[in-house]
Figure 1 (cartoon, helix red, strand yellow):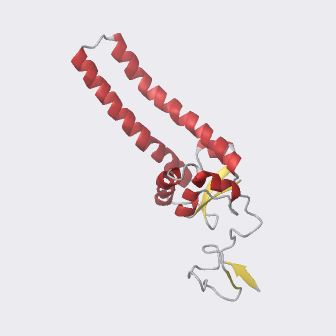
Figure 2: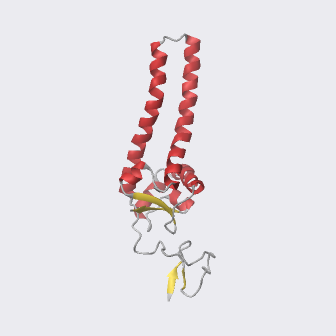
Length: 180
């Protein structure tokens, strides 16, 4: 009798405790090959991304709008307007780089295991064994999306045709997106 290794997905004997291919412990109650895993497919994940984009852009608008209103109301001078616009630009840059990373990494590594968009669509992010991921792994998954972006969308579309419905950044970070 044999079983599938949760890390490298090679077939190994049932009577062994460690995978002979990668050395991973085999005593896990649930493996990705188990039929109890329901993977989050491409369209469900795309809808979750759209909800998250709406949420993140809405928060950004709420934060930035008061600065725009205040700068118009008080009729700032040219030099103070330039300084205000520079400050606004730098703040917006920080907000658009750090904000989404913290939002997604903190939410996906929390007990919720997913962003608000993922939770609304019944998805959660796990490691390859179905366990909650750490903040470091969630951060790695987030920043790996840059590499996914360099593939002209192919890295994202992979979630539609790979066996475990993984996009390229999921594979890089060793994560799964599962249906709850």
